[in-house]
Length: 198
Image (cartoon, rainbow, N blue to C red):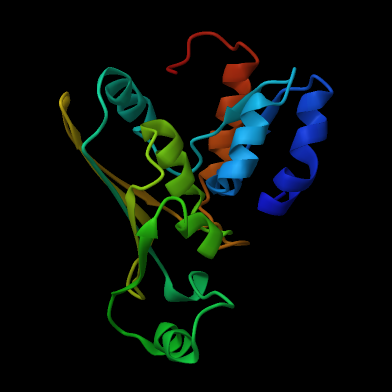
């Protein structure tokens, strides 16, 4: 289920007292939806990290003091980035490029809306850092063997750099093969399976 399913059904799930694990966290880039879901209940709202790591460390640093800089650079095969709103020149460049190039620069607030099937990581990073205005770069690279997410962050407690390279899912190359396993791990953690790193 994607962002639309969350918009359409999350309220009734939470109102029924059922806990909800959000996979399409990009939908929470909509501030009205995010505000409504965080006040709905009595069901509880949870998020999964999906295709990236390091969110626990960044969330811990943010609890002590705001991070002064956060940037996410997501690099994918050009075909997985094409969107209906793009102009013909950009779409043609995505089809024919032999070099990497930045397709879009924005924030965690607008990138998940522009790329709803392939940039939930931007929203997950925003949720962890408390910063929806963090810089996001979406880069196309025909030579990229894997999807790469590079996170750079800085604050009073340190400087952080994470580079995560995930194999794309064969059935849906816009997402990473690891995502369903990250979801299963989150479910196991929520089900109180002991002995896990949180």
